[in-house]
Amino acid sequence: MFELHQIGERTYYIESPAKIGIYCPNGKDVYLIDSGNDKDAGRKIKKILTEHHWNLLGILNTHSHADHIGGNCYLQNQTNCKIFSSGIELAFTEYPILEPSFLYGGYPCKDLKHKFLLASASKVTSFDDKNFPKEIEIINLNGHFFDMVGFRTPDDIIFLADCLSSKETLAKYKINFIYDVAEYLNTLEKIKTLKAKLFVPSHAPVTDDITELANDNIKQVHEIANHILAICQEFINFECILQILFSDYDLKLTFEQYALVGSTVRSYLAWLKDMGKLEVCFANNLLLWKKK
Image (cartoon, rainbow, N blue to C red):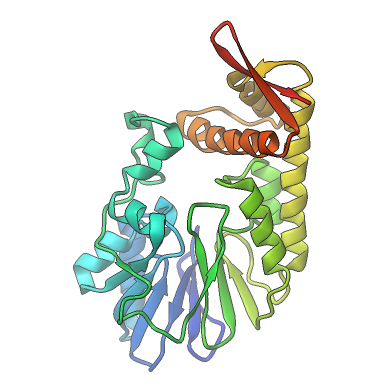
């Protein structure tokens, strides 16, 4: 873990729980793509930079989930580097309490305020800042989170952030986090059309062909959606839907999984309702869902 791999003349990645990209435009200065999940990740990244005599100019954040921005604060304090993001992701990165609050739907209890959901705050500037490396292409990858993006380096290598999961992750966790299901599917269809020398997903192996894995992720989304519809043959409330999904997929409910999977299931319900596949009613002061 935290091994450096060169995959282009000026492009590298660090193997970690969420892959960290490195773009080195001139042999001396570097930009990171994401920063790992915590201060310890930041220290390990800093060690690699020091060993290679690299000067950190900036961190390009794909999105604001804690496992992608967790090293920001440490690295910024150590190097005074700039951190780049945009839109809602910028706000969540500067005010990371927003992530557990959003996932839970209210003020998060202590069980949700840990490094996997709550990063340290960092000072962020937008992608249109004059110091952003203009040779890096920004690719919109909406769906997994609000304004997630990927980046293409001049070596024709695309960092895909969290827009898809490995086959092993799909099999193990079943319901992977999605904010906007419709946009997520649009993004998966979009990346199937992209051409690049290599693709670097954050949570899947580096590959020169992303199509098969994109199709696997699309298939999983529709499988989950159909499973939810099968559960909703009669009017049923959200908590019962969640309970059945956890039982059927042999998952263990914890506060963290309640927030992450619960938020995702609500997104599925909203998507299915907007497509006219689910209807709702209010009975005995409960919101109930049923397949149309």
